[in-house]
Image 1 (cartoon, rainbow, N blue to C red):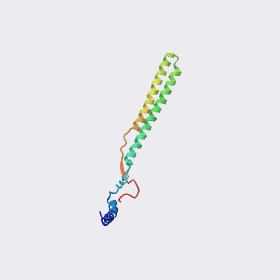
Image 2: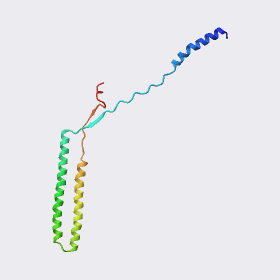
Image 3: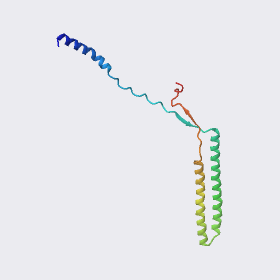
Image 4: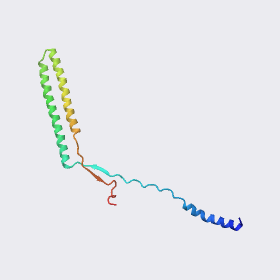
Length: 136
């Protein structure tokens, strides 16, 4: 190889190095961030709000009715106990009282549970995740 051909080859190599560096593949661009998910807000319709209020009032009425029944029963039991001298009859009255108290508690719990588990139909609507992004 002659000196001039060596210079030409080195010149070509020096000239092609920047082109080879640019020809390499560019690193992959990161994926754009995912679009924000819309926020779902559930708002009951006026009819649903009214029905919920009616259900709440009915539950309170049932609880008040059960409480009144319990007060009347307790007053009657107290009168019977005061007029009873037989210990065996007193024991029967006490057992009946415990049973009735359990029934009263069960009624109150059932009324509250029925109110809490009553189905709530949802009215949903979708709003943009950020203000001002709709329609862009």
